Amino acid sequence: HSFPTRRSSDLCEALVGQTVAVVGLGYLGCVVAASLAAKGVRTHGVDVKRDVVDALARGIAPMDEPDLAERIAEGLRQG
Image (cartoon, rainbow, N blue to C red; front, side, top):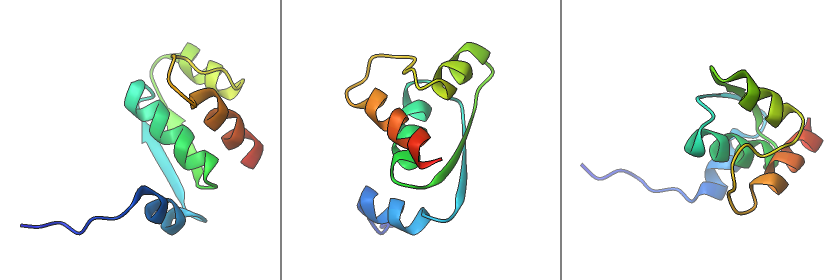
C-alpha cells in the first residue's frame, strides 16, 4: 500500500476549527500539541503527570526542545 503524503502545514490547515486531543505530553505529544495549538488548532493535552500539564498551562516548556517554548506561548495566545 502507498499512503498519500501531506505536508504538516496542509494537515494543520485542515484541522483549524477542529478540536484535537493529544494523550501523553512526553517528548512527542508535547511537541505535537504545541505545534498544532500554535497553528490555531484547538488542542487539549492530557497526561498523568500533573506537573507537566501545570507547566504547559503556565507556558513553561517541560523539556528542552528547539522552538518548543515559543510554540507553547503562541498556542496559549491563540486561546
